[in-house]
Image 1: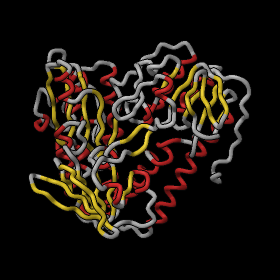
Image 2: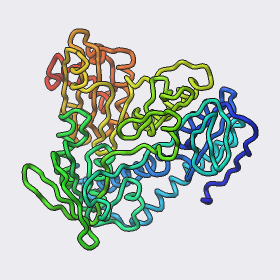
Image 3: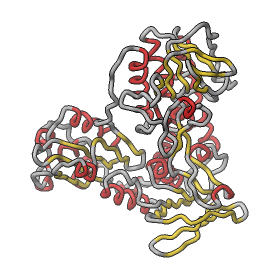
Image 4: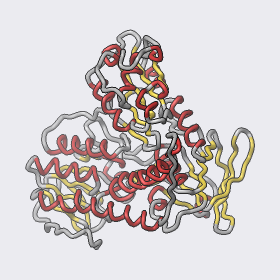
Length: 478
């Protein structure tokens, strides 16, 4: 057992009100919610406690991304006249070791150490759980529970490219565990995981290429995708979008990828391919089909708005489902599942004001509907696009990379969604979340008082842009 994983589990006695399969963010959220409601819970883990976020996802990636930002900031001091700076990766292995220490500490503090404080939770780590009539089978024993929540998470998916299994590859997990900094990498996929890690590795000194079938961040606004592409290219990342993958092959210790871009076939070579083309649900061995639990085309469990599966009494939450793949939404969905399963709840999953963040630099953060989604939903749409060279904070920081786009209903003036691409976009988006949550109009947002020289002030300026040219306003005149 890991030296950080020192805790005792209680031996199971009798029946349980609820069995939770999976001991990550969703599993803990469900177990704690039910235990706080006075229920007896069997929390069934397998492998490392804590799940994706703390072990191989959010925590390790964001600390490494922040390290790369520190490196880049020092190297970019020259954007202020009179300054110069230098920085480099002096000891890659020390950086990785510090990341591992942070992960282990948070895993212990936020997961293992919590268990003794919940008398109603019995933690079982005796092997993977399997659904059976009346409960769960784990470690050759049957755990009796009338309600079950499946929260087994997901893992990086492997793309269906001929030869890809024969070449040296990494995924988002193994990339962060490399003992040496590679000279070159090809990232397959331009989603949020791909762009975050590609920029991070490029700033660490690796030669990076991103290859994607459509465009970067395909689910967000096209203006943002184009702006981010320009930022990455300016940061020495090669971006090949609109590509068709043909095959992969090994050339000695290196990987070769054959693609077509702009009508021309090309061979790309790097030390490794990094597979960031999506995630797959961990549903193998759960006995879902035998219990009548349906999955979708990618193997994720189908759930209703009450988080119940197609089998009454069996619920699911987190990355194993067909819902939003964010850790905070996993915890939220698991809380609803627990309340509905064993606490008499009738709560419905609601992601209408769900914020999302991509931790590139600039950060990209959004909430609500995109312009395309709003039109598809039948709205008469109006939009506002404000580049950061109109935001005083960006001018003062001498960093005008990015933009803000707002989407609203023309008839009612009500905000429908928006996206912020800015260095502090992640911390600014929650203001827009609250605006959507209370049904604010663009006029009301534009008349709200914001502090000067903040990134979030850009939301006010973007709202005013629906009706006026903010470039003609004096400071704070709006």
